[in-house]
Image (cartoon, rainbow, N blue to C red):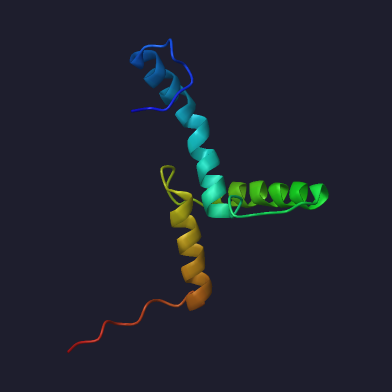
Length: 97
């Protein structure tokens, strides 16, 4: 069941409205999740504005560093984190027992 304030609308209309918003809500969810915007708490306006600006810049950089057009920001972030941790070196050979 979908939660909605539209008590007069039929289910088809509600689903179509929800689907039409998906293209804008999905990238916003990615920004919040992968850039740390959701967990941020601040009471100073100037700091909050700067943080949001940096998060948007980070999102654009992650978006541009995708290898494949359908790649996710999580894949990009994971690849960059692995490269930072390993120093760009390949993974060691698996142990044989």
